[in-house]
View 1: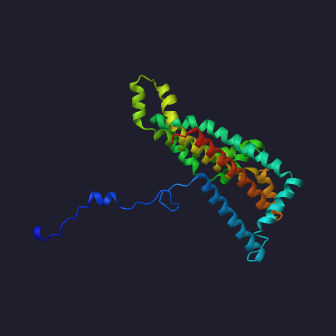
View 2 (view 1 turned 90 degrees about the vertical axis):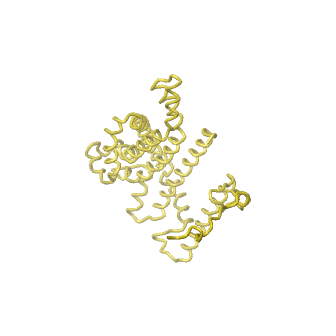
View 3 (view 1 turned 120 degrees about the horizontal axis):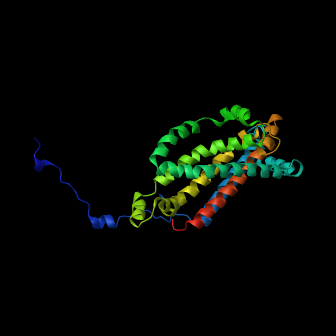
Length: 284
């Protein structure tokens, strides 16, 4: 057996030394979970984007890649301006944006109450969650033939495919947002005499609202990712139609111009929703 007297002494850190130990400066840009001013964030983002564009332009001009497959940014920009003037690119972009928003709003109107009910009442969650989990793992492209059989090749098929790629993801995110509302809030509301409807509307929904708005912003981006799939189904308008037509004739600059337009619309929309979130929930 080991003699207690022979064991190494246990050193207890001096609290005064720990208090004076150097800590990372949160104002440093490389600090773990540090802070950056809004101006610095914009400057770094713009600088990085411009740097990548310059590298891309240089690679294309030097000839390190075949410009048939990767045209330079200047060529893509020229194609985009030509498409705006001669191919009604802005009109196609407006049609695609309208489709995305109609399908997204329809998905949100359905997903928000269903998600709240799933997390608020165990019987609803037990009944619906296995079905939703099964459907959300189905690849949307594999359901295109069924969509055509059910809805034909009109506008309803495109909206259905966009809705399909958004609704089943969003409903589970809404349910998780409601589950994250602290149970203490519900108990306090009941203690103060609130009924179930008042508790859901005035306490739980308001508590989950910041997370809900953030998840709506994320799922709107997912809805845009299904646009090409939706607009290749006997379409004659929309950015997806423009991209698919240009691909058929190997017009790579026009394909990339259409992709860039989608990215720009998504970026602008995302930044507007971020600004709305910061303004509406300043207390976070």
